[in-house]
Amino acid sequence: MARAEAAARLRVEVACSPLARQVERCELTLPPGSTVADALQASGLTARYPQIEAERWRVGIWGRTVPRGEALRDGDRVEVCRPLQVDPKEARRLRQRRQRERPRGG
Image (cartoon, rainbow, N blue to C red; front, side, top):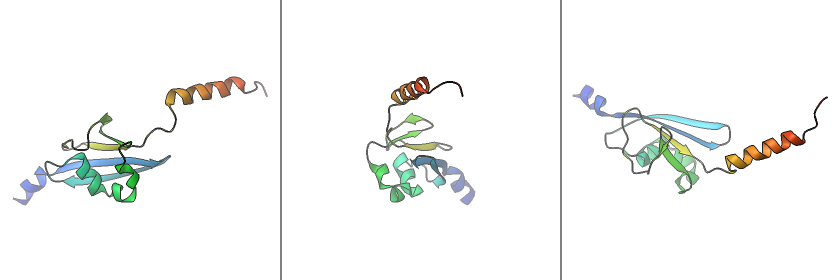
């Protein structure tokens, strides 16, 4: 009975980068029917980083954005993505402009 009960549980991973160059990962075992919100709560990330609860922080499963009520499957990886501070296209333009303006030679 215990073996069947353990087999029915979901193994998921929660990954979050609350700050630049900082990544937190947590492996969890949750009951069947658990949602993304349940995984976030069980991971303790929302307690340590209350800003995750803000709607601007997106959540996804394996890189695909999903609602927090999305049901989890065994082996899922829940990813919490903080909002972008700079548009990636604009950041690339700025890098290129700096490279062009840099003096050549040495």
